Length: 479
Image 1 (cartoon, rainbow, N blue to C red):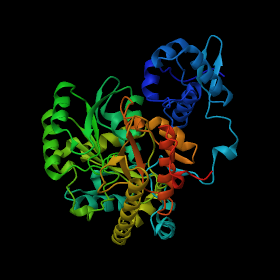
Image 2 (image 1 turned 120 degrees about the vertical axis):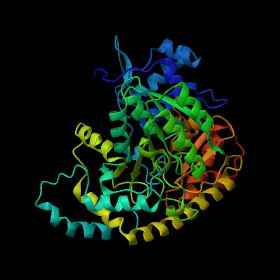
Image 3 (image 1 turned 90 degrees about the vertical axis):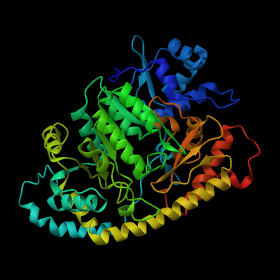
Image 4 (image 1 turned 30 degrees about the vertical axis):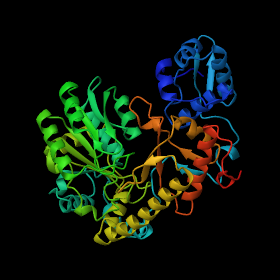
């Protein structure tokens, strides 16, 4: 089979792999093959991607062609890479290992910061089933969204300090789809898009998929947004669009205060730069009621800010619904361009979410915030016990802890942790141009009884990566 995807250069692949080689390891080919496999499974190297020639990759990584050839042999044997004389090598699949190896009963997923279903989901399904009768006689196309759901979303924005009417809300198939819809309408190939660094990995991928150019602005893991740096980027790079997460930022968990939002809104207004403010995590506030938090960024940035929300982080990842809050004029334009993406969100799912957003649903969310705060505290305690050299800020909301590692090893750690039954997303996934090898996002959405074990396994993986033979026995996972 011939490759169908684009080509990745040796320099770009080297940046993507980061610090792939284990310190002191003589198994360079195994280390390189494992690093490539991780990025294939993580979607960073899609099937069909043409790999650089052996000589080019050897030069980019600073290793011998013999090592590159041996690593490719391992990848071909596992079914991840295929080669053909005259066509080179390309990513061919996700491997042909035995299914029992690929899916482990004790696998702990820390690659996704997503919670289980909120209590009351099944009751909401029952309510939606009864309400569906009203819509079943129609054609089922509600391109703007279920009126009742738009009312509930508008009421929540108004309660948070941003007066909103239902006609300022467009329901979408998730927050990511909402962002892609805005991105496709407001940018084109070659346009610059402002992003935080680090940021949500899928946002980076979406920008590149539209052939736009990401413009990263560093986000300090302690002090947060570099507003002078954003001002300089707006002035010098003149981005056409931007993507920001100012409520429990993914992955850092930071939140921009009201004064910072007012200043940022002024910067956007002066530069006339529209941005998406991703509020997917705003309801997961562990210091109080989200209604009492800082007003949405759109309260300061006006029509230049498109607020995007989601049910995936607060209600359930399997409820693929999101929304855009914007001016009616802009939503009319989005509606017109939407048909190139989809024809609207499912009616039944919208009925479920409308039931979950009734007043009693926010009481359920309040209890969920208490549970997640406890899970956060359990994770923090486990990190301090098993990973005392790691540093981090305890997040006041969101679903993850952003950890600074004692050395650049995030990609190698993710590879090693996978062998211990833990899936991790390496820090490089959150960087616009890779890197961030000293950082690791650790979600705490797993059941509370699994969190200490997950951190214990990650600690053991980190010790093996660093070549530490004197790991305390209680920290070595049972295999």
